Image 1 (cartoon, rainbow, N blue to C red):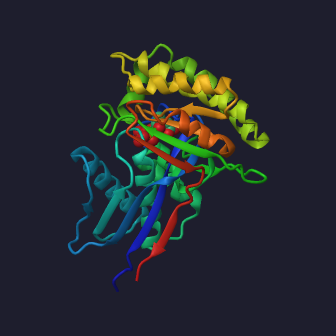
Image 2 (image 1 turned 60 degrees about the vertical axis):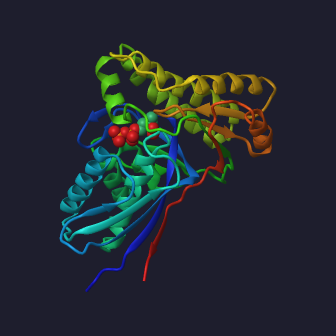
Length: 321
Ligand code: DP6
């Protein structure tokens, strides 16, 4: 009998404590724990259905290398789970892919969730997270919304950070470049690990940063979370800038935004920045200050888009008739 198509919407996430470096390149085992928040409105929508032929097909806009990476992943996932049959995977992002807005996280999370549902496997969430991790380390966290932690270990998975009551925070995404980035996160983190003299310092301090951020979230201490997240972000970028050859993901607008954030923080606006492997900046704001923060960036040249969204990003899974 023909299986019903599945529609999945998975959200991107942004790490406040970054995953940067692996102990196993094939299995995407992170060298250190990470902690992220789901971004409600940056999403990948994917439909998984039976393919007419016995081979997997991908529909969507992809770079050749990304297309091959996804097809290899689907092949590997089916083999691992002991399921067969060609799949048609139609996927679309509502944000520019490969530009540092975490398309691999939402993309691979959507496929992992979709394969589970399509074959009726009903796997525990932690196993779906493990499966997503095999596609991309950060995808393990996009299986959930809200604050999510990812541990290390032989076969790690992500899990939601349980907080007593929700902490509503806004996320302001400032897009400073629409073009795909020149170096992927995967290549950059491997190069950093192998060549940056600061990489060992990064690893040595990661656990302490992670625990501090967890405490800040549990205590809902905005400035504690701001301070540790900005520090962790700049530490990661310092390792990237000191790899051989060196690499800088930022553009002049990225730097301009950092300066403006520091200025408005001094005025008391509750906002902090974080930047993944790309030039885009994500600002985390207390909702009572979001409007005023947005006004500060209205006339900054070089920002092509301002996306105002919030912490959230629970995946949605639907069986189509
Ligand atoms: C800077 O998850 O894209 O966004 O596991 O090689 O696919 P692979 O890497 P990826 O790296 C994410 C790096 C980051 C930090 C983070 O999301 O924690």
